[in-house]
Length: 495
Ligand SMILES: *Cc1c(COP(=O)(O)O)cnc(C)c1O
Image (cartoon, rainbow, N blue to C red; front, top):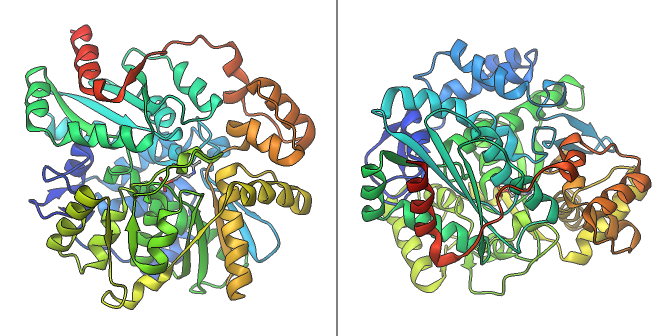
């Protein structure tokens, strides 16, 4: 299958799209068309395990990779999840369900794509790299960084550098990154927020001088952020898989519609749900849940995307984002796949920090999306109430989604069954989760873990428990302007 840039440059194959990460014109790669999930395929997939479902769906996009080869990648990736099950669906009350995406090596949903991406990239490198090494630059709001580091750790021919906002991630997210081993991993804090890190990385990606210098040093750039198509494709799978699991458990009939609620930051995860819809998955509504950085809530209510607003640091830091880069891919669809439409909106965003879309002029299809946001108070009460009512412990990101779901339900009374997407283990945010439950402000992260465990009885994952005894390896913190210099410094040291 061919992939085209949202801004119009020449088409590439799926493997090239993964290897490049972002198009030369600064646009994002999207499939040239959406392959259909036929009735027969849906019925066959009912009987498959997750890894088989993944291979079946991914080969529709990466048709240059034989299905047996893809299956060997998905097997290796998904064997790293508890019980080889990346997306178990938990029945909450027969109406709502939670899809738990946090049973991978770093305890956030980013693992579902980032355990697989290195395999896709290595396959692509064999065909396209001409002996160049791949330099993966990552901007992280907390979870992508660690998941990418673990995925690419010691992968041959690859160097990975992660930038995170030094004061903008949870204490445990930071420790997870700072203790990463591996000879090709680098982690750098910047004085700034996630948007600064993301802008810095994107700028380096599209600067011809930097690219030429990297080439001279024997590197070509790629991305492990959700701007990379290789991040989105594996995320389509779990929406289909959750649907099939509900059919298998006789909660719905094949072809009944269901809703998904997705806690959203960079718009990657929920975009994958939209792509599943485009492939034919019966979806009623996609509920876009934001925290108090509610730029997307406003966009889906009146078409105005305005990033000129205060940046709030919240207890769901992986959603503290004002410029959601994957919205560009949705704009591409809203504008009838016209690159000129996207270029115009993106240049307005660059110049004025805002743009708007006239919802009367775009297809009816986009009423699929509903935006809701949760304040910090809403988030804390969602954690507390949900534990009280359902004896189920939410992380703050998932709690934003739960709060959005109940707001939506109160407003609409929608009878469709709904899957709430759970994106992280509550233990990654032990301090805030424990405070939401008890009001007690336990600042020491390991004490908070202990208290949370005592209160909830939920087992502490090894990845979190073992952090206490790991050596801090990566402690650099720089100004955001120093990012390019830092990268060249790291590469020179490697020579
Ligand atoms: C990254 C992340 C999100 C936001 O996902 P997007 O794909 O950026 O919308 C939500 N929750 C958690 C825990 C995350 O790590």
